[in-house]
Amino acid sequence: MKVGISVIFLFLTASSWSQTNEALEVLRARMESINAFTVNVELETAIDFIQMPVKRASMSYDRDQGVQVTSDDFVLIPKKGLDLVMSELFRYDYITVPRGEEQVQGLESMVMNVIPEDKRADYAIATLYLSKQKNRLLQADIQTRKEGAYTVNMFYRKDEDILPSRVEVSFEVEKVKIPIRYLAREGEVDKEALKSEGAKKGKVILYLSDYDIELIK
Amino acid sequence: MSLMNNAVIRVEWYKLFRQSRTWYALGALLLLQVVLLLNAWYQGASLLDIFLENLKQSFHFQGELLNGHLLVYIVLNTMWFHLPLILMIVVSGMLTSEMEAGTLRTVMMTGISKGRYIRSKFTVAILFTVLVVILVALTSGILSYLIFGVGDLFVFHGALNFFESNDAFLRLFLAFAAGSFSMVFFSVVSMLLAVIFRETVKTWIVAAFFLIVCNLLLQMQLGEGWFRRLFFVNLNDTWQMFFEYTINWSAILWNLIFLAGYILIITAVGIWWFKKTDIE
Image 1 (cartoon, rainbow over the protein chains, first blue to last red):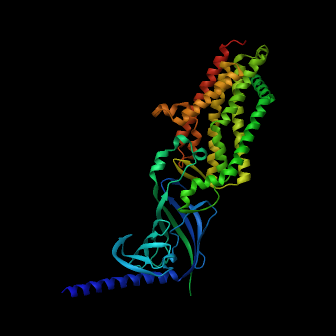
Image 2 (spheres, rainbow over the protein chains, first blue to last red):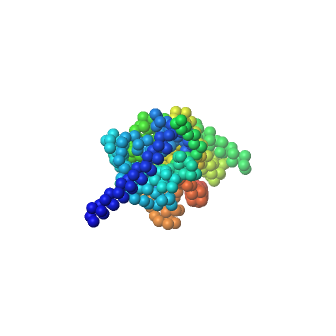
Image 3 (cartoon, helix red, strand yellow):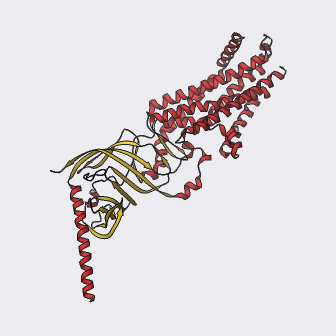
């Protein structure tokens, strides 16, 4: 009896692992089919101690050069979360661990942990939420080795779109230090509050439009 | 009557610009701006590094924040103390120097009424103050934009506010305009003090004391409710409200109306006091 239950458990686990791995490999193949792309970006900064108008920039990706953002404006470009093709995730060998299913953006999603096998990888562990029906990435919670954790949410305009039209990157950001003498009147700065609040949750929303994608032939 | 008034005012302008202290004051203001710009040029990069150190952990920056707008904003901050101090010295000197030299009695013997004489003093003091604010805005703007160019302005006002270049330019322009009300306020106060104290050094000391106390009280943000709203000291930082992310136009307008009211009251008291006082 015990042997039977163990066999069934092992079978189910293996089946789940196989499904997860297969879905991730489909995603990887699709992302790796992109050789380069350019896209127009509008950056919205949603951090409670920063007020900034929506900024416009141009983002380009090249398989060899990675992601580059250029703009005529002053822009705050998040250090993480711009890797839309997930090249960092797939750079080194990894193992996957299925974590069940969850609803994300109203879609049934497969949840899995991705753990790199190589210490050179930027991240320590990533939790991915893959849409079962559309087979694409909806959310990634990534724990980096040196630069903290961040979450990427991806939204797509059309079912056939390979890359998202909106990306939300959430991360922890330290409160700024204020050189009061130059940039603020002493009376208006609550120094105690500044000291005590520490890190805050910040979010940068990228609206992406006019993709020009070059696929590998 | 109008021609007579214009002639009196023209004479006041002439006397003001014949005084060496007026040119020393203007020279000092210009030099102060050059020193500030050099200081910002020297310290700017490390200042921004300190300020944005924490943000650099999460963001790459693209674009130059050490630009002309930031420099003009830094120069604008000097209006808290340096500019009113220099203005108060020059403006009060317009009257006290004539009182001390005895030329006031000679002027009165020409048939000009005391009322017309002191009104012309106040008028020229107000116009001179506005002229100096325009001069400071122009010189700081020209120097800053020529050396550092333009770009986004960032200031701390409750939050870290970023303004795009055109928006920053408009806000700085409006801040200078609103700041000129404060400067006029201090100028007419110094003229009133000159009317009361009559001696140059005594007037300068009281004027400097008044300015220091005003600055201290402003830092303390005294009072609550309507008192805080109407207290003249608190009205003097109205120009800072242009650097809130969303401009509160009605609050600014009311502040400037109240400040204009104070200016009128002080001017009226100054004229009344001068008219009732005997010329020695």
